[in-house]
Image (tube, rainbow, N blue to C red; front, top):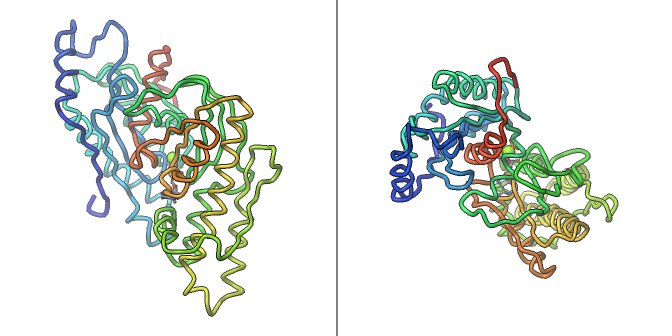
Length: 362
Ligand code: ADP
Ligand code: MG
């Protein structure tokens, strides 16, 4: 545990008090006439052990994230076996902390949602098995959810105002896709990356520049000191009318630039970071806006770890305003992996009647 960071997002207690009082008047703790309101979410798909308690799919009562960044940092990427072991060390403490900080008490949890995939199998198994045992032991309904649907629902946390349908760009370390979203649990994929995810490109470019892992945040910060136009890296649109992406070309372009400027590139790191980031952001923004126009949607959402990128948030906000669209982006701490988004999507599945079984697997 000493090598982990625990980030707790604590919300004003008066909000929970209200909810708590209302629950105490119900016929039995956790009984809301069959309707599930308070969901415990658990996430362990990669290198964050997370638990959260969320009310009605939107109101975060607690959200605890134990990051393993310090554990994997020396290896330049996530080491799957280490990730599983660290999840096992952290899971009990993290879930307990989330329940205590929620202020509602275990008896008022109505259901459990846990990430079932995609992710590292050994890592997923820890959260999934814990959720299964916890729900079974307490006689609670539970459901396994798709991590990506969790990200898509992160946009409703704390603000339930985004109307359907909307078009979402999900951009993370493992995925880069555009979806036409018609409900909390209904969507159609419009396009996806044909090779690397955008976050993966950030991480690899950071490694090439000697800036370490994970790379997104450090490139973002470094880019603020550079000139985005000094080194014109290629923009890969594939077909300009389509919604697929490719980020392997820009990665190679940065590598080639470093190799051909071996003696000078070290002084140009902020310009390389800014030029690379600009090329990625331009393509992501262009495709999201075009996808929304194609669907005649004037609401767009940006979710996933890369949605924390300051230039992407700014550029999308400007472009959407010009196109007459409204943009929804989660708070920075809800862009990366967290369990509040898992509880949020789980709330909708549980109330739609979805239930996991004891022999379900990841
Ligand atoms: P996963 O891909 O496992 O679902 P996340 O959704 O948390 O994980 O996304 C992690 C990715 O987000 C990493 O590739 C990381 O570099 C990237 N990222 C985080 N912050 C930023 C940022 N400010 N700018 C660009 N990328 C970022
Ligand atoms: Mg993720």
